[in-house]
Image 1 (cartoon, rainbow, N blue to C red):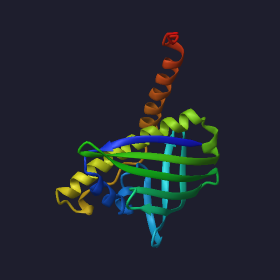
Image 2: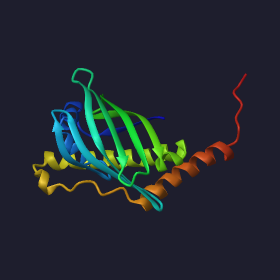
Image 3: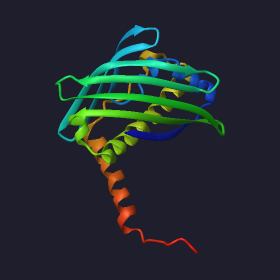
Image 4: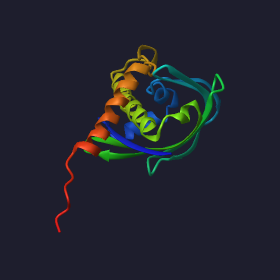
Amino acid sequence: MLISTDFEVGQPVDKVWAFFDDIPHVAACLPGAELTDEVGPDAYKGNVAIRMGPVKLQFAGTATIKERDEDAKRLVVDAAGADEKGRGQAAMLLTAVLSAAGGGTKVEVTQDLQLSGAAAQYGRGMVADVTAVLMKDFSRNLQDRMTALQEGRSADEITSAAPASGLSVGFAALRLALARVFRRFFLPYRPSPS
């Protein structure tokens, strides 16, 4: 399934691009993500945990940077993992493109996500809604972390993103789903002028 989202960061594009070059800092911004080992120049092992109501999925896997295009400000990451309890697998090809937006940076993210097992039981809408919530948290954490580093605080003083809580992610995703249903069924149909 293809999921596209974008967000803005209040920092110049060159600074955001430089930040994206430090994968441990980037991973620390994603709720529920943890890098455990660097296994090559652009390859990492890690874990991603997310709770959706009563189901907690904990994926262990690898992420490899497949492309880093300085001129186009384009980063492509190939990630794959398996749930530690054997309940499914996930694979994702993530593409991030940075561009100037006023005095800040627009980050466009496309995720080609393949799920199997327990994670695949959630519908496309729910997965897209949860992804939107996580990307919103990621963008806020990214801004906070970049600001802290700019203020001269060390990496040890900057806290990593909190794990993806089942209740907060679930409620936020539910709000998005209800808004989608409301728009679809309750907004009056407006025929286009002829």
